Image (tube, rainbow, N blue to C red; front, side, top):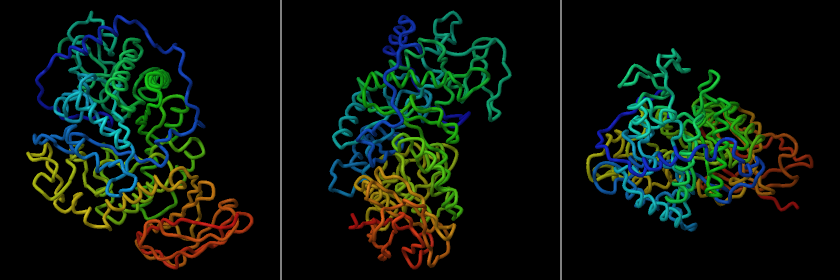
Length: 564
């Protein structure tokens, strides 16, 4: 969720949140419970082995409202998503007609008055437009049958202004829920780093409450033990009663405000440490990944013993920046920094997410550059995430609703998304850019994503291999090895718009074992590449894999040697 967003509200008929109110009462009665002083579970060491499911995995971000409509009302829902799970992963390693993603991240599915769900009114109920709690449990069962993990977007920084706790606190200054939020009798005069107003006047009396992102999203006060307890209770509910496999945590740098800091405060790290320890106790093996929309330097203090992983925003910028500029100079340093600091399953590169201009739009509609970006993302280390529709080159730019338009399944009415009127108008190119059209084209962007995702899962060097940078004789060429023991893949990409002849590659010592290496194209359709000879020092010297690299062309080559 970007700073100070102003989400669209949708009409609601308020329903009593009986279970929510009962659980809130229990939280108030329970006292401090598992407060920050509680003994944490064994922390995940940075050198711990990767969970088996993450080895070579790719995750897929889905906005349920826009993925597939199962009942014809124009709004995507859980039954619609279930019907399309085989597109994500059909559960058969032998097929290549699915994406092959091994986990899905669902943007918020809990009850909310807004179209996007980032202001939660009832953390214990699936949004009625998406279905029921039982529908969610069925989704999890069907996903697990196909080998797909299900991560739920968990919004902890703030609740909806329609949440029962906030409504009670707003109505009664003596309410025990007052301590769940921050209040001031006068406006403190604080502004957030983007110049927005953090404090909002109460509609009922002369006072103000704190809401960093928007007045409809009052921030929760994590200095109150009952708030921390309620966050854990919600986590336990989704993990044990609903069957979720973990969480994507929204806007985690803003959880605690202290000492004049509104983000990255020490108390935020304490809350995350406590929360993650509880998740591991409640469901060993659950996976947590956080949104720290900042530099890598700002992200690294969230390790080693808080969430399992975080999204690597700098790497997204590096890939798109390199492809847009036609220069490889700034592509690999961020990857190498994270590789040195952390295991690859603990950081997640991506191209775009639901808050950002879609890749094809950001690249000016250039599909060749979008292919390059996908190839880089899916052959470099980390746990990659792909935003729905990116694999077919959907377009989209701000405002946010236009970044989250319905999935374009076909050229049929409603784009195959709905039998009714889509909740949001389709993108203008939906008749040409859709899944059905690209499934008929073996050279399509969708076909490339499928090949790369399956290749990453099957090839040990791409799944878990070390990144070894190579120096190219031209700045427009990105070149690197991925090595897992003696299994090695070489990636060479011309990011520029001009053909390049005789591009030579070099490495530092120890890049490869000595010997003669032969090459095999892993994506098919490529000319044969020259063999490679490596001396006793393991250094690659003036290796020209191909006599010419066409503009915006990439090659993924397996290197093999018989030398012991």
